[in-house]
Image (cartoon, rainbow, N blue to C red; front, top):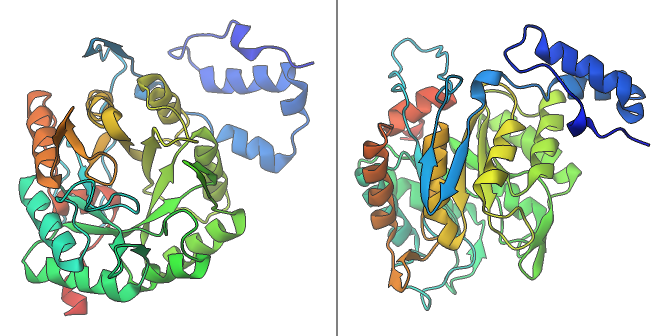
Length: 366
């Protein structure tokens, strides 16, 4: 019934009016799209992306990248505060995910699990070049918890150490180990960033449920408390969910997407998949990637070549190389070293705040 759109001969992206022509072609030749209502047609129009964001990446043993004439780095933000530090051209935001919900001390003694250990690692990684520390909390038995008291303690210790690293609080809750209300509790602490897992999926042997009702309520609370959502997408359908929430006004710019690739039940950790996800983003969105396990470093390098940003850390990968356990700081240091070779200056927390439209709040809490 539906004509194969991929087989259609469309003008190249450089052609004037290409986006409008593509819309007309799809609407005229696809019965489903032609029958869409005004709301769905509006969403279709928002799928358009600038041809300037197109890039090509190949992995043939080693990572190779040809930027071509249409490459451009991640877009810079228009800042409302004139005293905010400028985001460096081609700058790179490095995030470190210190702990996660599932790794254990038995697997690696370097894993931080107490507020003191997590704060110490966050400060050390910031010194090494990380601008954002994504943190999960554990209880006294080492199990995942969203207890606001643990988040408060960890953030206070980081600030008392004199670090200005951006604290990104998780609302993941361990894929079913906590209730929706418990997961949303950290938002009331008004972190600068909190995770926003933008859809449900199989998660190993579990099901990670993020219902439409939960996402709408979480977005509403984040807006009320001035929290920037880190829109975590584990597969392409999650980007589609985010675009609908953007259309509904529940997610507002600047957008900060985190692609999580390699979870069993999510999208595979390949450069081809990363390229597809980036192509789905709205114009001028900022994005980062974290690969699970052995995919962490190759995908991080691909993101650097594509103009995106990178997440590393023991939440996603326990090894520095095969057979050698990592530490959070060593993983950050490696990315910073590679970024220097690729001409991607590492952003400070203040510069990352400028790009993502954040403002430090430690002074107000003090």
